[in-house]
Length: 165
Image (cartoon, rainbow, N blue to C red; front, side):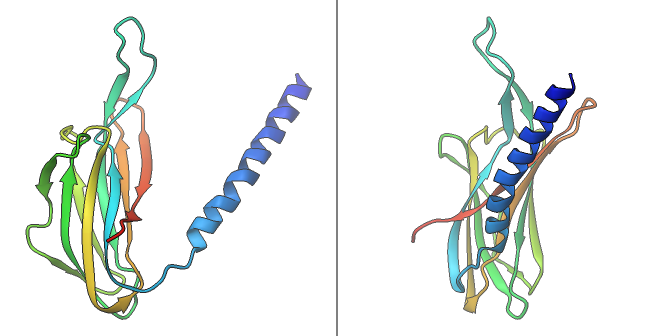
């Protein structure tokens, strides 16, 4: 029994040792200054889980998504031009930014997909366009997904990636 506990501790330590360098590299990655970008942000309005079983279908849990667009430049504002929300099949559902919005230095713009909005599906996404008058530190754009119903909690994040123009 003691041997199993030691082995479990060793595996846990190895897992942490493997994950930490990649997380640290992501967090410390220097980003080039830019005057604008188009970003792809994955969104999950629901998540599949469990076994397929006799029905051949997995269970699903609905998720809300808080999209956070954070201006990381301490001196210059950015302007968010659009935030288009697409479903799993690539169909445009809505533009959540009907008019451009200015995000002040170190400011944050938030968009929200409600828990009861399953229209996007598990493969939904936002295409977010932003610009600045001068080159700035690009914004940090991420989404916090959550469902805390029924005594259980599902919480995770997704991060944007720039698209080639």
